[in-house]
View 1 (cartoon, rainbow, N blue to C red):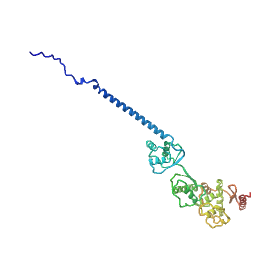
View 2 (view 1 turned 90 degrees about the horizontal axis):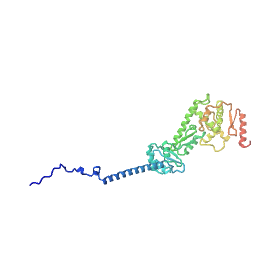
View 3 (view 1 turned 45 degrees about the vertical axis):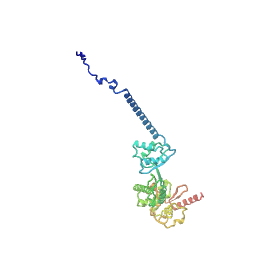
View 4 (view 1 turned 90 degrees about the vertical axis):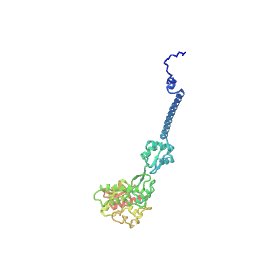
Length: 361
């Protein structure tokens, strides 16, 4: 007898997907979720710490870059032409201007100024920060150097002056013509050639002479700028009183117009020294008789050339002399001169000067 069959309930085999735990469906086991969370937290805190460290480092670097530097006194540093950033930083560090060379290089590069730094001689003050140093180099604020050429020096004396001036390059061997240099104060930079500075002084004289010659008084007893400088050099050596230059020029112009010899002691001194420098003794009457083309006691008219390098005021006086009837002058004992129209008046002035010189007055 066949047993009765079980009724078909219609049930289906279980679905494996429905049989998974709820946590697997939502993304993994609790252990896996915990691991991912820890990684995420670690990355977050690591990134945050890195940002804080980077910000702190940047702040420290900025304070060091802008804070007081190591110098305790003024310091002059020369940066040679062609120096790169590293070479500049080396020089500044060796001179005590910088303390953290690598930080300076980094700061310069971050500022974009590494291609703007200029060679030259620079002065840095006490406690100058790296930022201050960069600003000076970037603007090219080099040390100002000056040489002053006094009026009335001979060309040989000016050459000696320039050859002794500090921070210039080369030497001047050949003495330029007398009266070709304009006495003045000239600016120069370290490393400039002395010969180039001399050329600038000569160009300044030519420019000034052209300007003054164009405005000269009419009917002067000379015909060329060179002769004007010659007369101006005698005026320059005769008086250092500004208010007298035009009157001294007037005396010499009067004598030239009348065919009188100039009889100027400075021309005799130049004849004796050949322009090498001042005479190391007092001038004598015997010196007036020396045969020399520059001795205006022996020659007529102007000497062959200047006896010194006159300044602007002396050249201006020679080209625009004062109207005067004086033909003579002599020292008055007070730093100036006594002028006279006649020889008799002049002799009295000379006698008075000799008494003052000898202490009789």
